Amino acid sequence: QVQLVESGGGLVQAGESLRLSCAASGRTFSSYAMGWFRQAPGKEREFVAAISRSGAATDYVGQVKGRFTISRDNAKNTVFLQMNSLKSEDTAVYYCAACSFFGLNVRDRTVYGSWGQGTQDTVSS
Image (cartoon, rainbow, N blue to C red):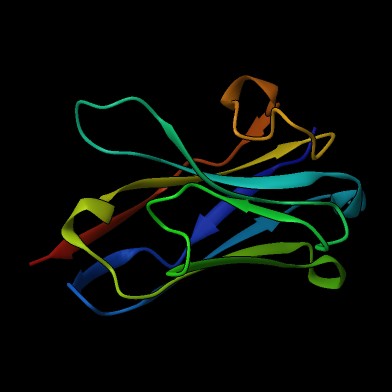
């Protein structure tokens, strides 16, 4: 398994931006597809975005498409989530996660074997 640590969360106004980072330990980062999930109070953890091992393929949930961008730097063992035009409904704890394959079930949280501890993002309106 890979160890994951998120950073970059915080409190912003609606319309502003945040960039989340997720640093992975180990030398096998490039063998994992990576995903971002979020969990708002009282709600289930939901898929936000995912990226393939090479970064060539990405997937986004509809609510963030066009506003969020997932990217990765395999040389630095880091995956990013750039969040623009933030809305109050984006408020949540954001988690990064690793899975072995970027497939049709990449939105399914049960296929991810490693998770970070989460970072809180709060968007005030």
